[in-house]
Image (tube, rainbow, N blue to C red; front, top):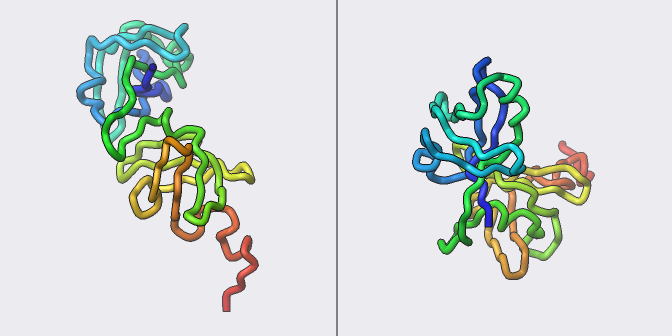
Length: 177
């Protein structure tokens, strides 16, 4: 199975440097000069890392195969992938294991479907598309994501008030005094 290590973002500068959205817990081990990656879509690669730098928590890469801003712009959205196995750690999941799971409250009320997991500096965010089509970002912490059950294909959440549709005073019909 293919696992995403990083997704190429915006071009940075004129010589092919790009930002990347890191999708691994160990970027300092995986994103190193000389490392070659298959890509998704496969037509974009393979790509070999030529240079790595970080600044203000953001990762910047240059590849041997990308030397102009135009090439960097064309690579935007390309994923760097590796062959990997299912996670064998307790309370650890790959993004592909979470995407598509039904999101429910403890009562069983369906509140949406997982569409992504964003790695942020403070904590990961579970991205949920609600029945209305709007997306909610729920901090992936024990207090708000109380259960992930891959067997039943569901995630049980208790997000803070106001994150989901129907929870603002305007949507619930509540009035303030």
